[in-house]
Image (cartoon, rainbow, N blue to C red; front, side, top):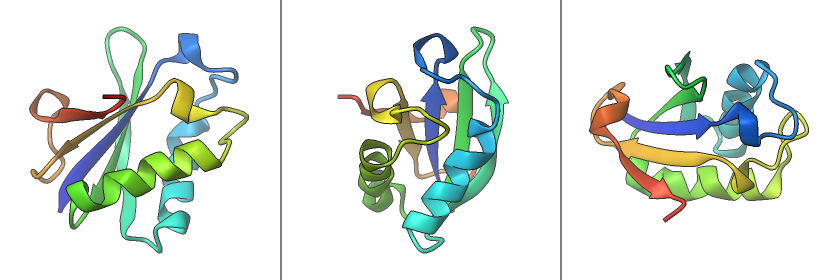
Length: 104
């Protein structure tokens, strides 16, 4: 499996709730017919949250993740305005091994 990471900064969110760690993967799974699925989350030292997703092909599916963020408010947040998206071909890749694809 490959990695997609959505990074959220609580200072930039309209409604910075921890429920996002669970709600974002649920929406991604639903909108991609389970081709993108939950792979955990963690907080960075600067209070940002990283939501790890897994998929067979990160390059193919990250545009769908961005589309979902642009078309759906999740927990009262328009994530397309604040989120960053990173991808890697590695399984459960560390953040440092991913490249940013959104925003470009």
